[in-house]
Length: 482
Image 1 (cartoon, helix red, strand yellow):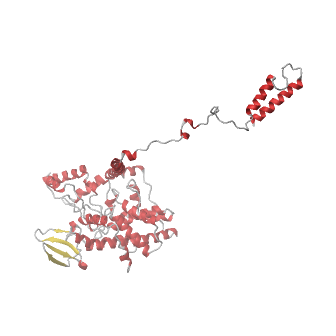
Image 2 (image 1 turned 90 degrees about the horizontal axis):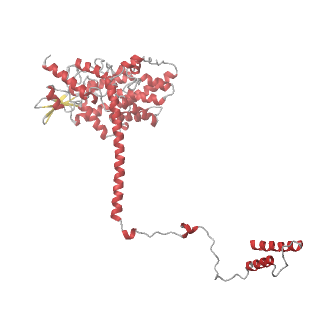
Image 3 (image 1 turned 180 degrees about the vertical axis):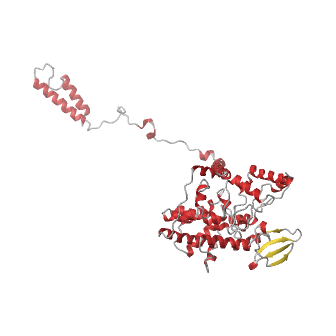
């Protein structure tokens, strides 16, 4: 084994052990967090301006979510389509690593061989079996079938996955066999391995930053004027859009590449230290350094020129795909077409569908969600602590011991003496002239002692006399009770 092969082997080991492929090497076009949602939102809004039935807010959100989730690993190895050959991703132009080595390591890590975006969009059996653990069957036919069965939410979610493929076809690197990824600590890595490695796709990196800074972007009003369809079916849209990006634009590693006849340079203009290359319609395609001769795309003016042409085409094609979807749904409802159900996967087929990369990516998503949850709780705790500190400082700086002290106050109703108690009569109080109590008590005593009233000697010899005395006593007691 020569030095170069040893270096390549070490490079592959480095990629596996350090998880470089976790940055979605060679397969992710527009990023799934900003670019795809932004483009899909524009598609849904323009569709509602042009066609019926109007998409509801919920249906728009399902389409946007589906277009984002299509990039879940390892689905994105199937997002390539070269219209000049009809081929899938071949692992080409990953600088420093031969094509066959890239395919070998791809099969080892992804656990699968890639298919073209055109195949992937319809391949229910492949998605339902090999990718069952990674979003499963999101093929176009599954969306049509779900909608015709009444499950509109999942139908639009699956259709969002298809819109993702449409949008990827507007990225030259995905239609010109340009594998790409950013290697961490690239200069140190290249020095250690003694080989030159890929430094990513500058247009995609620019597009991500552009989408982050332009979330309120509105291309709908411009595209609505003089609207003309650019395609009429899903396959038609995928092929035409891939041809547009392949024939009219470069990716970083395919500038004037011998494998592609197009695009043609119409003129060169010297501008300072660079020679600017222009294509059809005066589009700036790349800059060539006059001293080094190196040809590059990583200039904002070039990226903006690419975006201004490619993004509108992706939106126009996406609108036509939604229209085509509704037409196919009506055909399915009227039994004009039959949507075949995917085969049920066997157990061992499911085991064979496990992707090491997919599982590690799943673990990475879980770790990210735990991290985000932790940071959210930490942020909440920090906010509460800040509020508590501010409140404490305010209390300390505004405290006045003399103004702040208020003597305790209470009423007799709040004490143990609030219960009603019977107090002894005041011996010095003036007598009530209408009070007959003392007089009646005196008469009762006299009756009972035989003083000043009928004689009561308790000999029971004169029963009538006793009864009269008792009746008189009872009468006095009644008066007292009143």
